[in-house]
Image (cartoon, rainbow, N blue to C red; front, side, top):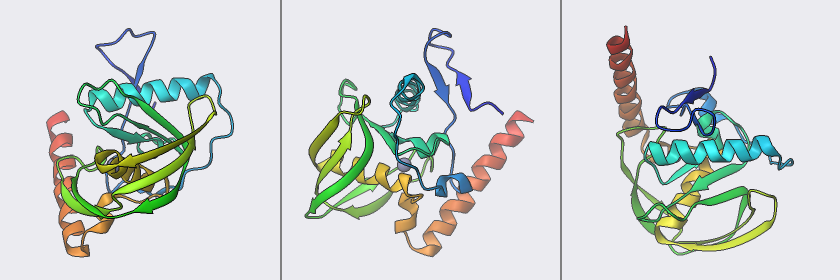
Length: 185
Ligand code: ZN
C-alpha cells in the first residue's frame, strides 16, 4: 500500500498527504535513525509532513508517525499557523522546571490526558538544510518538542498513563478502528 495519499485540496502535482499511524500500531515503537542526507527527498518529506499536520489539524508531527524512521519533527504552535519549525536530529541539552499539560496526539485520536514534562528545554538540532540550530523553548512549545521527541524513540504519551488507563485507551481506539472499517465495508 502506498504511504502517500493525494490531498484533494492541493495541486496534485505538489504536496502529498501522508497516512498517520495510530496506536497501538507496532511501527510507532520504531527508533528513528539520524538524518545524514539533506536532499530533495527530505525536503519533499518535510513539506508533506507540514501539509499532513496542518490538515489534521495538529501542532506537531514526528516522522515516526508517518512511518519514516528518521530523526525529524515538524511543529507549529502559533495561533495563526504561520511559524513552522523543523527540527532534524534534535537533542535536549538542558531541561528545567515542570509543567502539566493536557496532551493529545494525532496517533491517538480523541484521547487527551495530563502529562508532566519539563517547563523549559534547550534543544540543539539542525534545520531542514542541515544548518545547526539552537532553541530555548518554554510552555506549549517545550511540551510539543518533548512529546514529538518521544515519538523518535518509539514512545507515546499514553506510556505516561497507568497500565489500566492505557489499556482503556487501546480498547477505545480498537473499537474506533473496527467502527471505521465497518463503515467502509
Ligand atoms: Zn504525538
